[in-house]
Image (cartoon, rainbow, N blue to C red; front, side, top):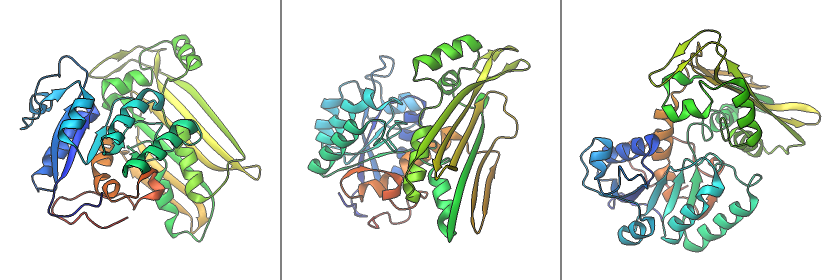
Length: 347
């Protein structure tokens, strides 16, 4: 679909957790311009089903939340679905397929989706094939992966005549974030519990390797070797958040690194520190190149707001994208979707 400035883009919100609720709220705010319209909402939480979106998110909206995705998609026929249900691609594959077969493009916060071609090649191929068949586009995005440690790094290289290496650091005070994220980084558990969960997999930040692969792909560098490390950050003193208390000696969060090698040298290094009580939050991109780049966001990028922004701001780009499974490198540079301005420039 190519958007025109006269017809509002019909949006369904699939998932009304903290991020999904934020996305629905932002869609409703931007809908005042006539450019967007929230036409459906899907969630399986019994406490939300059969309530209006307005009741769930605290805004004015009479759209009723349903647990029947197939029914909603079939009845309202959205142009696009904002999908915010799970971090793991195998768990959401069927949900994405439902949306695609309904003729809707998809923007998903699933952290394994921004660059799924190596971790889940079969699923990626299937989604790409189906998207092209039904004439829609699918994109995985968010703050990280999707911006802070990949897209921002690639944009930083845009004025370089040569690049030899890229180093990205993200330090986040998880104590300022939502409870699910604090739990995801293990805040409050013991070191032994941390190690057990790490061994089982699916623990900590999801998507760092996807960010690494996206940066390498964007620069056209093959990955000769890759390394990844996940370690606990242990609280030295008691740390309190609005949701939990971390005693000394318990896990405060994670230190997660990923590195890619070329010709025996580290060419991309991603260093994520996300723990409650982290001091001096920052997002920093350093490019060893001509000219060298040292870009820092002091105070860091607040992830909950930024994830919502990334999802909603991608709407015009995805609506105008060529059909298929897309990555950030396929689309125009991310920018704020300002409802008062045209959004119909083709990609």
